Length: 242
Image (cartoon, rainbow, N blue to C red):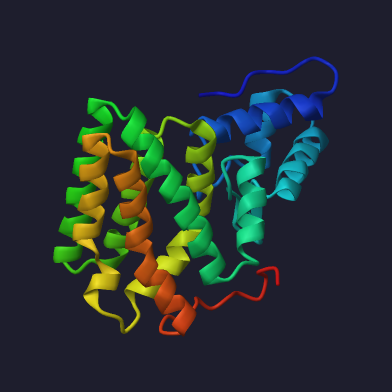
């Protein structure tokens, strides 16, 4: 979709608003490179300096990331998400897991109270995909499927703020899950199919208390392993904030 031409005053703010809309709407997905500066200048019908200022502003918020010699990439889907990710990069695995537990407990409770038949079908599909990846020994796919399963629960809670928070937590969760799944701990900690199925069963039954208990229980072993030092946290890059 081409960018709208802007001819009013305060062009930088208008360009920023349009770029944010393209990112939030998925036309510039997280992880992809945005169009080059000459393309943006032509599409927006504004000057090069205006485009540069807008891009610089979004880099400052953390939504965009310049890569030397390669271009500028989308790093987060919103300024809020970028702020969450910056904070999580300074957090330890256990802190992240504890926040995850709080979000997933509430997500499961609200999903049990609010889920639709379509939500339930999506949960069953996500659970099956998670199990398929585990049985196939594809750990990266398993981690993706696990995150998608829990995002589906958050979506079934029908609280957009909670869903956004969980989505923005996902990058930090991915690193933590890689640590847990790759650690020398029992499969009961690494896979936990029965525990995840118990969450879906409780949501299907509309039992909010059981859903909350199941969501918290499946994380307890992982948190215990982190507290005991059985799971080593991921290495941080030099440019990660400390």
